[in-house]
Each structure stands twice: as structure tokens, then as C-alpha cells.
Amino acid sequence: MSRQIKDDTGHVVSQVYKLGVTHAIENPTTSTQTPAFGAQTTAIRVATTGHHVHIEINSNPVAVESSAMLPANWVEIFGVQPGWKLAAIKGDGAANPTVSITELV
Image (cartoon, rainbow, N blue to C red; front, side):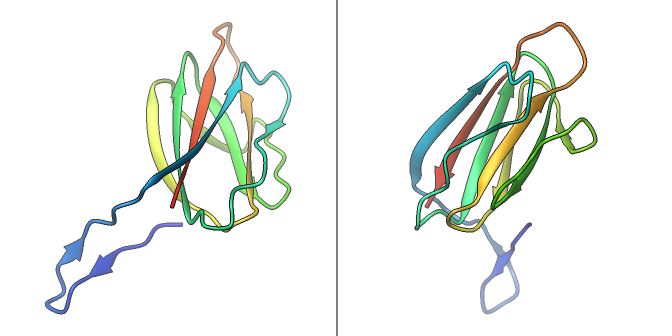
């Protein structure tokens, strides 16, 4: 989910968030979920290190290798709803990824 905010003249305005709670998923060899996102969370910042991962984001996600892929050493922002979760599973390969998920409010 992506959103653009435009001012009265049609120019895109960058959205600014406060940093909230951060969750870490380390070396997810099976689908691993975060806790539910807080009541004020409308977006999350997801950062990966070590190896690519596959993710799902919804109320009860299960990540599989056909889920959306995030490359190693990547940062992405996703729109979410309060109460949703992120699930991650590592992709094929020997490296041990870490996924850092920061709630944005």
C-alpha cells in the first residue's frame, strides 16, 4: 500500500512519521510473526540484513517462499492497519537474515 499526499497546488508532500516500537525477527527458518501492531500504527519500516527474506503483512500472516521478497540490506516502508502483523521467512541460501520492523505513527 502506498500513499501520496499532495498540497493544494498538486505537489507531493513527504509524509513524516514518529518512530514507535521496533521488533526483530532473527533467522526465520519457518514463518515467524511479529506481535500485533499498535493502535496508532499506520505504517512500518522494514529493514533486512544478512540475506533476502519473504514477507506477508495482514491480520494473521504466513510467509512462504512465494511471498513478497525483500533483498538483503534493504529498507522499505509499508502501509498497515492497527492490529496487523508481519511474518517473515528466510529465502534459500546459507546466510542468517535479521528483519527489523519499526512501527511508524
